[in-house]
Image 1 (cartoon, rainbow, N blue to C red):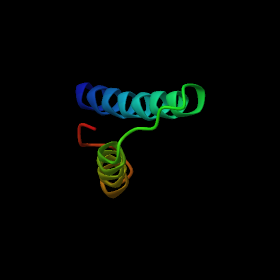
Image 2 (cartoon, one colour):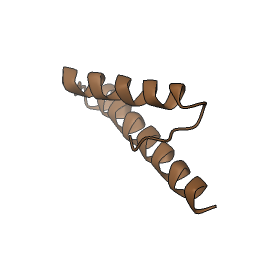
Image 3 (cartoon, one colour):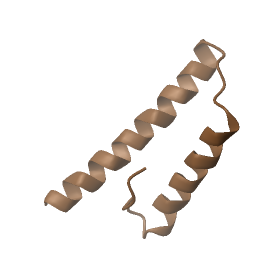
Image 4 (cartoon, one colour):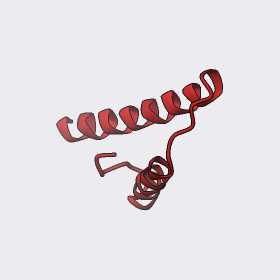
Length: 58
């Protein structure tokens, strides 16, 4: 149960980071640098390739 808890926490945190970036882009018109897009695509790829469960710490 502890492992599932940690996995869920990491997954929700990564979703919150992406949501915050999207909201700041829309509301404040602040676009993240290209490094953010590179890092987020690596994180999403890790979430997808790990059998549907985000095992890496995004």
